[in-house]
Image (tube, rainbow, N blue to C red; front, side, top):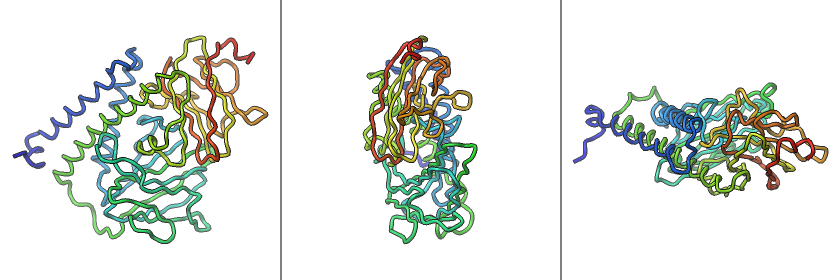
Length: 366
């Protein structure tokens, strides 16, 4: 008979299993198709260390749906799946067996979206979105205050749908201009909650460590699969099936184009498009592991507000290793290859962006 959670904690088996599962994630970095140079390998192992940190936050520190609280699963030093540098991501553990009240003030952030989701990377359970609201759907008080009920059964007013297996809330707030925009202030509570949370149970800790380790392996594997697929068509932006991005807990209001880029020192990747009518769009560079490049120190992305447009409303973005002296230079931040993404948010249409390679010396004549 298998030992119960309490015995597995007492004898150390829980920790041994956690470490053994984590070891499997290293094989993702060592895949045959993965870049084997020192920079990409180093970033790969740093990526795994970041995923471990994020996974422990999600499955150990903030995993109790009876006492939900917001935490950040993606930020400047923790990145997953083409994370948007303009997005302020907030997560909370919830359960479809319970009901919740979310309240706050709207702020001035241009895009605010709330999604409930089921499943997680590394799990064999189904994965997707059970309900979504964005700010345009909200009933607001004159001073910008609002509240939303999260439940499986409909409620009047602002209602965010859950399903019985819903387990996570994701809030996305997208900046256009961080200098002048104010985030929404948000709070969440379980309806009917009384008193402080109970002490940690052995089975909760055992389950949390197991889920955390599987999350690391599953997340690394999922997005390595994506990168390998993109690399088959280098320097192109391919549309992603919304069913694929939905299963990966994407925002249903976003249409994605993603790809793989690789440049010689004297080459530039030129991205051109005429943006559709939409609330937000951006283009960004990532490393091979689909982490956004370090936007704290390099201009690795442009959005609807920061881009310089042509007279006809189109844009040209230029990815190059050094500043070529043209508008909209996207800095490779010392990388020679990686992944990239373009997203239209709440777009009326989804025009295909055009990508091509030029010599840097040819840019001025183009």
